[in-house]
Amino acid sequence: MPRPDPTASDARTYLDHAATTPLRPEARDALLAHLDAPGNPASLHAAGRDARRVLEESRESVAESLGCRPSEVFFTSGGTESDNLAVKGTFWSRHAADERRRRVLVSSVEHHAVLHAALWLGQHAGAEVELLPVDRAGRVEVAALAEALAAPETVALVSVMWANNETGVLQPVEELAALCRAAGVPFHTDAVQAVGAVPVDVTAADVDLLTATGHKVGGPHGAGVLVARRGVTPTALLQGGGQERDVRSGTVGVPSVAGLAAAFEIAVKAQPESATRLAHLRDDLVAGIRDVVPGAVLNGAAAERLPGIASIGFPGCEGDSLLMLLDARGVEVSTGSACSAGVPQPSHVLLAAGQDELEARSTLRFSLGHTSTEADVAAVLAAIGPVVERAGAARRVRR
Picture 1 (tube, rainbow, N blue to C red):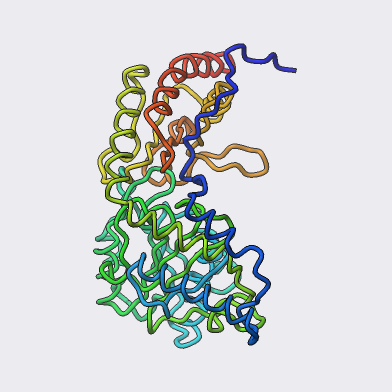
Picture 2: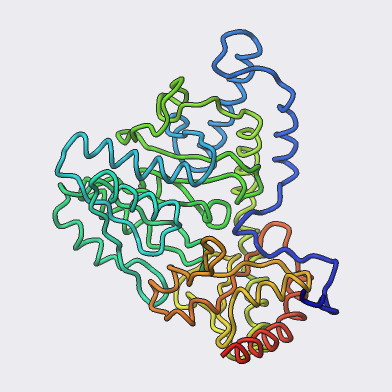
């Protein structure tokens, strides 16, 4: 049994906002305001009509926050469902209309909700999945998409995320969407990390489908959004009562949707000020870590990035060891890797950007949000030196 770390702290510093950010007071108030209401929005009596009114007002609010029409907003259970509905549903509808449309083009750095949905189509639905390459900063190569669209009649869908969830790198969404628009191919973007962090406007960016979710912007878990613009109607994944205009069957959780809409509204309105504040904190964090650990490497440094995410590699260390040692000191972050059945795997994002496995496994993701303060940055800087020294020593011993 391992001995306890005598430096462990009971105070917690939360720097994992890219995973989930704390509930905003406005979202909590909206959620609680409707928790006791009995009505189902599909019912015709007064309680049902009240629920329907809240649902449609929430839809209008989300549409205003995202720059689209209310009729283009579909509520789901979260980002993963929205991504699956966009990727699978659009492939099925496009392929059914023209069997030549078998190709699904996705970036090699997509969130697994997109990447695995596309690969599932390749394994079970006859899709031909092509991964778009990225440069060393992790940005999709625009020329590669242009080349892949040389035969647009064969392409069912293109999906490239707005901002990467591990590195924070922003993709050239408007350029990519313009290529797809010219080719007549639907373009989907996973904007889960982008909403509330950078300006996101569906109409201005001219994307066809967009994914967002509540718990990344201070809303409740279990509520998400798929925007599908006019002319793009994904085939439903779920069969049932035909809610959400037959695109997403299932009773919509009105309290959660109300909380989501409130969170979107405040996050989008506060975005300019929040971006400035978080970028300052992020830059102080990165500079401070580099002072303490001169060999630390900022991933995606050559590209424009989200204001609240810093993905940093610590050569000679295992990211998972760093995470646990920081956790013992009261600092909560995440790694740049995904775990499968308890076995750490190198980040597919960093591998796609040209890192080797050792580099990809040495990374931590520090992500700030609406509750982050200078004290949080100070807590990381106080802990990181001893943690890196201990993790590096442990790795040398294992060798």
